[in-house]
Length: 241
View 1 (cartoon, rainbow, N blue to C red):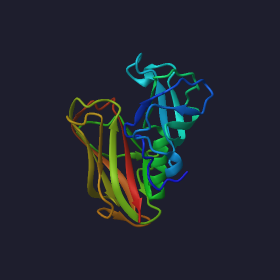
View 2 (cartoon, rainbow, N blue to C red):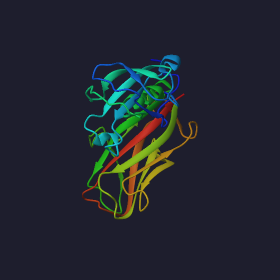
View 3 (spheres, rainbow, N blue to C red):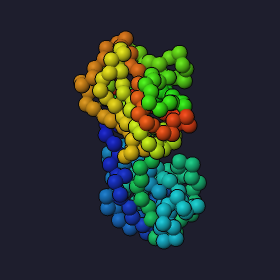
View 4 (tube, rainbow, N blue to C red):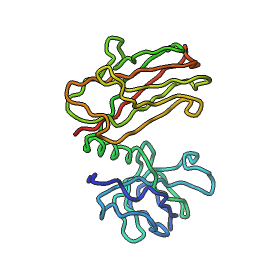
């Protein structure tokens, strides 16, 4: 599958089945192609969901909803691979809704694109039972003996995210990226606005590194609660030159 760009269709394209289908048909006739892209033309397959929108407000409520991988669009007929993403092929009546949706299939393409473009996520920073009004360097890869990630090649620091498994009720928790022990100024903050999650991005070239440079994450809390019960996780994004 080509991944030069993202699939075009999952932007609200929808229609209805113009005739019913059984649990094995791969050609699905719809009322109007509308905004659906042709995956054969673009070489970009995408996921559709079929469900009874007259009986259920959301597709996940329909026990017979089914994900289909669209592989071709000819006129108003979608050809697809049935029973995707853990759903079972099922019979669907004429008039049921078919809708292009974001999915793990799409997110997998995004992840591949990011990797091919030299973007990488550094996961594994975790700190438990953090005290209020303190400064601590986070553990990395689940061990107190490792608190830094060593860069393998030149690149840039492009993002940080912070997550707390327990919602903040008071104070702030600031996660800052340090390079070789010095602050970069790139932070994500748990506060009254972002009570469990925050993320910050920046353009490549602002904070650069070379092979052998080390990144750590420093947590600073000011009147932060809950503290003894909070588990704090952080992720960095880096971009290769």
